[in-house]
Image (cartoon, rainbow, N blue to C red):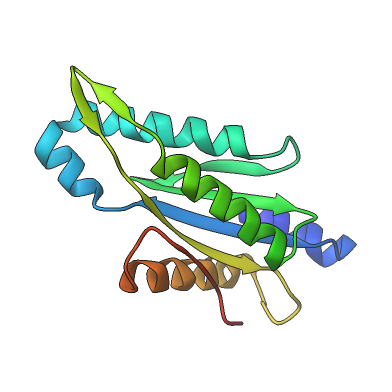
Length: 147
């Protein structure tokens, strides 16, 4: 997914930003409420991502409780607006599974593609570093990669 977007950037020089995020303390959701409840949290998270995205954005589940969004025609500032809107909407969600209410948050990392980034893997790596910065600094926040 990011490889095609990277190739498109190299050819057309249009702004692209990558947002990667994961569900905070997801293991605790599974441990406390069961894997089916965790699956429902993932479904609700994915639905919220799709609701926040534009038709031109590319969104998907990256693995486990991790998701990505490639934002077309988006610089860092636009990507941060998207990430914060998504973060707030997820924080406001209330997942009810078999009568149990589950609240959760996400941590996000953002990286705008630039000529400094040499390939798609590096782009993803930079966004992932920003994600871990969010997690290490309290979670439930968005961080921008320092490229």
